[in-house]
Length: 70
Image 1 (cartoon, rainbow, N blue to C red):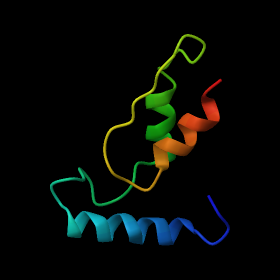
Image 2 (image 1 turned 135 degrees about the vertical axis):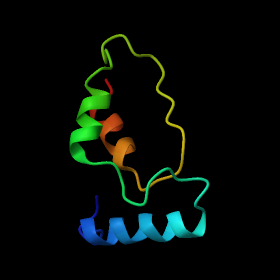
Image 3 (image 1 turned 90 degrees about the vertical axis):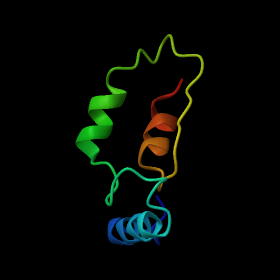
Image 4 (image 1 turned 45 degrees about the vertical axis):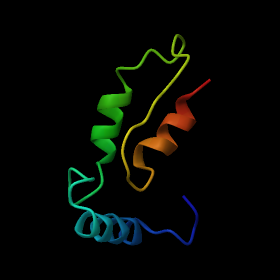
């Protein structure tokens, strides 16, 4: 995350997108760090050859996926 992008501005962006496209997002707020760790903790990163991330958002999962990929 860039220094110009604060957690509050990410939440604001997420909420704006939710109200603009409510059928595309399942939540008014981005996923928590705890949820991201729980979900990605189940991936066998040594064996994963392809990761597909589906859905719009602010990169909460994307950044963590990129950090954990080999």
